[in-house]
Length: 412
Image (cartoon, rainbow, N blue to C red; front, top):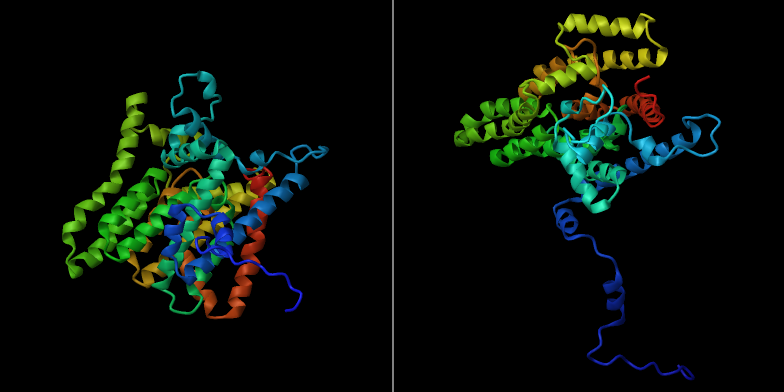
């Protein structure tokens, strides 16, 4: 063009102009980039859904801090750390920061500090994340965020074995993430970390990778006693498939997941002289003495409907009863489908939670029952009406229970 100034070309040794922009673009950490290479399009869709629901829960926490402060006349919201770090979080924090038996008595105040009841897996992860982030609340949220991402991808991949319909794996992840107690997957609790070990362990077992399954299950038993129920399911799965597939030599590996609980019990004994220190801490703090299943049902029913407790407590016990019925129905349906390993896993969980003085934490335990969410996904995929009905029931409960937790009203 006449009159246009001449723009000199860059010398041959200079890189093209766009490369400078590419060099200045921030790069993801190496471990993240390697993980992303193993994800397909369906996995990425699940992760987008996962991140969206995390943002929704954090938004709920923010609004709760402003709408429901501890002091109704307050002019400032509750601190964010106090909103997301409640109840069991304080036990995990104390263990990660001070250990199980701190030298300073002031680090273990109060008769309700039964920290021996909690396995060391999550506190160890929390302490490691704190070394990187420098803040305990941020560390707890980061552990759950990263572990939850692993868990939902693994859940979707397990769902592929059962749901051939398009969108089935994503539906299973959606139902878990929109379940009534989904808040516990986002805050500093053990559910996400447990699932990050348990679901890949189950996926590895389905592929006959028994050494990997055992190593991952050992991680699960480090986090929660529920990991032993997973081990029982793995043993049943092994018994049903190993003889046919010629993998009997892998059987000794299934003893590996028992090592972390045994080491923990031995550690508590060395400090307390009590081989049952973990169980006794459970009994002191949460009334988990053994009772027959019908006694536990009766006591919980009376607490829920006998007008002996304030209405917030009674409502939560009503939720415990509903969760028990859902669990029983899940076991029956799994048995009818001859999915014996998953039936054993859920049944053992119900037995452990349903034989205490009264029911406690069964709704939270539903987060760990992956066959429930896969089964519900299959049920809702058969009809758009079923999907609408379920989400209209589940999503409001998810929001209500999240607000209940963030406002400090979870235990009444």
